[in-house]
Length: 294
Image 1: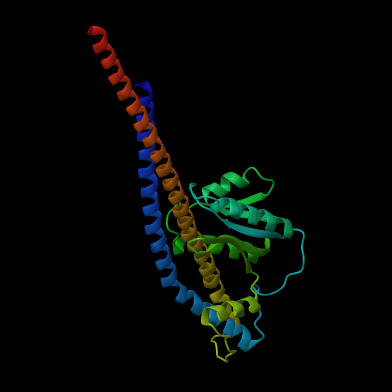
Image 2 (image 1 turned 30 degrees about the vertical axis):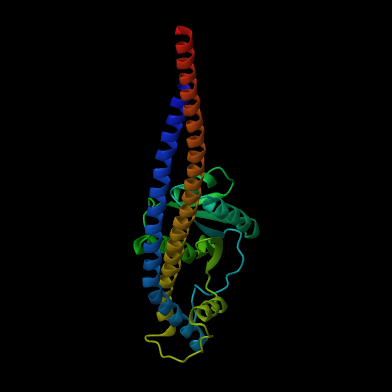
């Protein structure tokens, strides 16, 4: 009877865990759909800003901007790496893949400093030799434009003051629900070739260099668009990482649910065998007692 009681307790605990994993799977599914919808709704706006910036650079040809100039090497300048991780675990190898990508990038660049988003990343890199310059946390909520503006304004201000020579962002890009790959992207200083490549992918064809007139001047318009462009990149990276996290958590919870169901099935067989053995023993005792009485 003690064995039956232990098996029942284990089955009850696994059943409760199974309910939790299934609930988390459903929640992550809903968050993923919402995140993809939000990203698709805001993408045309930032794409239009990117097109305008490309038109200025390609048409004017003489734009003088601090955001596109190649600065001389200075040992005092740092390479900022914005690392986008999650605030919660239970997402499989989602965060571990980002950590490996960041470590590999830090070995390639000069004077790396980290700007972290997500509690998991803060806990990990606190035990590494890399310098952490700033932490941002959004408490596992859907990233908003205010969050992107806060990070974007910080990056632009530090780049403008000369503290950062380059700025990179590392996040997880979701190519599909089963293909989640960490991605590194340099966002400052700006690169005309990369902008053309991104526009070509988005439009399916190479964008033609068009001539426009910008008032009061191309330089002023360009410098006004850069903060919006950086904000769009940061926002897109945050939302893309958010939906990738939900997709990774869906997969992890699905695997956990399958493992729980397998364990539950095995325990059910053990429970039935133990119960049958107990019934058989009781019947044997009854028959033996009856025979003795006769």
